[in-house]
Length: 81
Image (cartoon, rainbow, N blue to C red; front, side, top):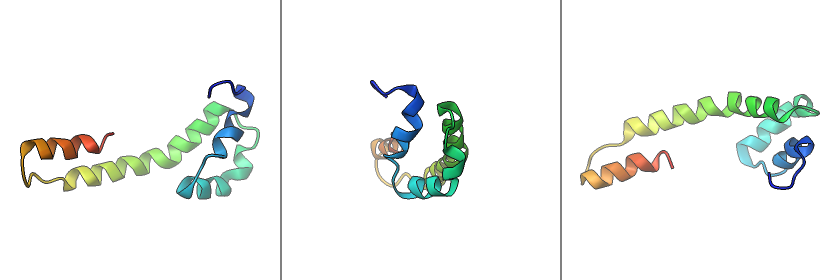
């Protein structure tokens, strides 16, 4: 974060959380007080990386070649953008 002192990175970042991440933050708020950025990042990855990975796999297995090869490739690439 540009021009933000590392000591307050967690506090600044959490102000931008919305939806599922904001709800998750409420459930772990006592754990993230005075936590390092590295530890905080690890908590986020532990909670959300697995879900995102499973979602991408489900979407990948549901892509079907129904029209042109170019359309199929665009759908495939779109999952990872």
